[in-house]
Image (cartoon, rainbow, N blue to C red; front, top):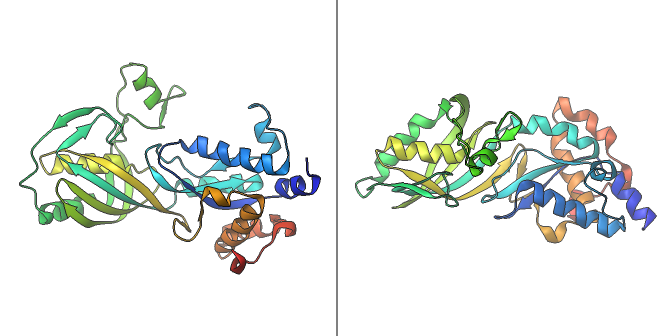
Length: 278
């Protein structure tokens, strides 16, 4: 173990963002990140029970396995700040497919319905989007991380259990725009609040058009103040020095917010690096 590097790693407190690729779960990405940092410091990978005591990690909201994009990570005392991100604003780019519905509301599921869509115009779709902007009611998908009796709904469904959908709940859509329309595919830019499911949105849009629709691709482009383009670290940057830079740069974004100013004093001077060096 390199004691100097290990001490630097253990001193980290704050928030930063990583890029989650399509495929792995959010938890798997976090475990991969933790393993790389521990290996660089020469710290033996702890057992699952002791893992959080060696290096405390958390993320600011699950991103579907089949989705990619920004995953905000809290390390050390920064994990206490993650709850504010769960209710904060998020932006997504979604590619939907008309004429097809699946049980998961995305391309990973089994096709449950197919309907004609050739009569749907760009204007039809744009008009429908207006109904899904602002404060709306939304029913979450069955395949989700929401829990009943301590178990995820998606896990219960996969076990073959009869599961009722959660009741509709209020969600906020700040903006919703059609960026591309090449039937059967269409691309949406969505900015929404916490608890919102883009998969449910696309499914509901299909129904509103008297057809059906499912998500083919989903990318989270922003979460809170963290953007995919400016702040998300790709795996080749998952190093102790890379995280040190990201912490310093990303935490500077939050210092202007009064409720988060106190975190500045928690950041170790050992890993202070100029944003311009990133």
